[in-house]
Length: 442
Image (cartoon, rainbow, N blue to C red; front, top):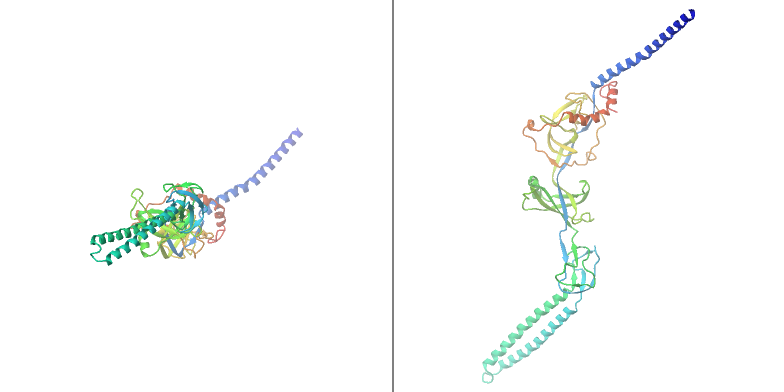
């Protein structure tokens, strides 16, 4: 009986100790969870971490973009003008040639013989003419009783006939010389030869396809199209002077060559609503090649000393475009703005923001007018700094009624896009609740 009581007392003591341990270890965990919830609530009510960039003053070039094809200014297919056997080819495929350079030689024997024949015929006619002129002179010196007038008239006609024959001989000689010259085939233009179409020793005829093609590659042209809506600005720029055009790679960034606009087509393509244009490029480094597809960038204007902000700072609402401006007290103000130009990188503000005010570029999920913010490091300028001009390509007409603009999406789609950016800043928000307001986000 005593042993049983001892076992019960021991079990009771062990149970009490276990309960005390559980109580001691469980209470701090509960308090920690409560503290975490309070910190989470405090973080949701603290400053909003954002990124901002300063508005700046810059000269902004205005470009129009089009797609075009490189085309040689002159292309010639060299064909034989006489029949004969090719004695030799005096060029290499892909060689740069000048006007007048010898390209090929056709056997001239037949045409040389024709020239010699024409020269001999002229010499014979000249001798006959000289004899007829002497007879006419003798007949003219005699009296009318010695020679009949009819004889003198006949001799005078013979002289005229032989004189005309000499002129015909001169024409025959010139024709024979021309055919003889055609046996030496020369380059008609400056350019680069292509792949030859015949080989040495072949018999060629004037009706054949050709011997080689020559293409002028320096300078070279680019044909491209632009929408008819941009024709007014282009004509105004062309009337003011030379309009610069840049030929770009398919990435739209790498400049292959720079030239000037030469021709605007005299009609609009009614099928596509576009206008064809041609620009000439020096092509010194042969970056452009006939048949190549390129992007054309046309400089039509340059906006002087305008306010430029990053495009991500531009937001859309029911009342039109707006931006959040960071004030000196680390609070943001919702500022309606009017845009003049905009592309995917930069936007030109015509009204609403002045330099060097700071605008929010990232962190719009919990942002509203008057919210307190903590500003992180400013974003790097996409164009490399204030010294480089921004490049704007898309024109935006200032609205006559701001309420008429289509609002930008603000629902679930936008929250999904920005929650990813805000998720990485969650830990920083909790840390900011334990720091004085206005500290920079690390």
